[in-house]
Image (cartoon, rainbow, N blue to C red; front, side, top):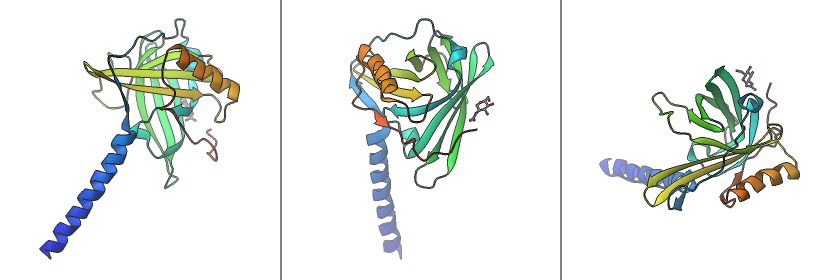
Length: 197
Ligand SMILES: *[C@@H]1O[C@H](CO)[C@@H](O)[C@H](O)[C@H]1NC(C)=O
C-alpha cells in the first residue's frame, strides 16, 4: 500500500516536472544584456486607442498558454487610468475566460498594466511602439532581470481578427525599425471564434 502510494507520488512528480518544463519553455524569452532603447509613439492618443484589439501574435507568455481567440478591451476609468479586460478561449475545453486589470498612463504610449492587487504601477510595462489606431498596434515590454539578462515581450494587436497582409507588414516594420526580433512571435488562433458583442 505504502509502496503503491509513493509510486503514485513519483508519477505525479514526473508529471509536474514535465508540466513545468513545458511551461518554462513557453514562459518567456530571455535575452543577453540590458533592455535596449526603443522608440515609443510620441503623439499617442489614448482615446483613439480604446476598444477591442485582437491578439494577432506575441512572444510566448505562460499566462496565456493554451488560449485562442485572445482579445483585449480598453476603456477609460479616469484621466490617467484605463480598464483592461483580456479575454480568450481555452483551446482544450472551449471555455471562455477573462481577467480584468487597470493600466496607469505614465506618459505618452507608456502604460503600467496590472492585474493583481498590489502589483506595482510605477514602471511602464506596456509600451506602444506604433499604432495607426484603426488596424494594428505594436506593444513591447522589457525588464532587466539581472545585470546581464533581460526578458522581452512583444505583441501585435489588430482591430480585425483576421487582418490583411498589409496590416501585418506595417506592424512588423515597426518591430524591425526597433531591432526587435520577430522570430519568437507565435500567432494566436483567431479563426472559429465567437463574435464579441
Ligand atoms: C468593452 O468595454 C466596454 C466598457 O466597459 C463595454 O461597454 C463593452 O461591452 C466591452 N466589450 C466587450 C466585447 O467586452
